[in-house]
Length: 91
Image (cartoon, rainbow, N blue to C red; front, side, top):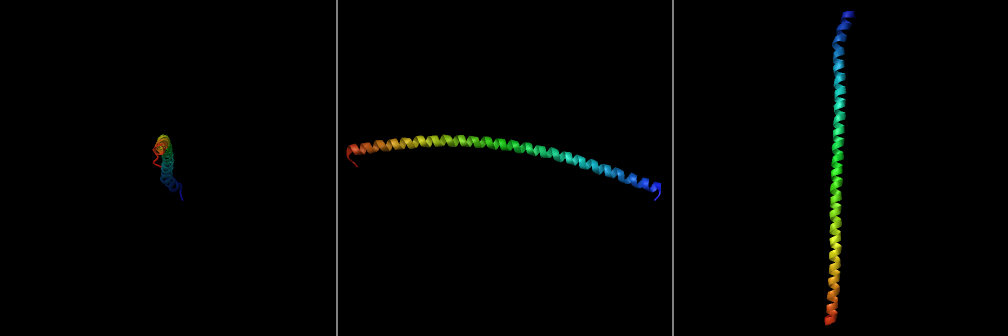
């Protein structure tokens, strides 16, 4: 091959290789940005879910407290009714 042919091949191939390399580097940086964005959104989603679960736990604790209070009232009412029945001789 002559020098002109080698120069022609080099001038045809080198710019293509450079463009492909630049494309690979840009794509890699865009994927890294996308990954960071997705990880950030996932962290936000996790924090929001933890906040919601904490709110649900607080509500359940409140309901449990109310159920305990109602159970105590029912037991107290049953005791009173038992005493009235015993006093009246119904049982």
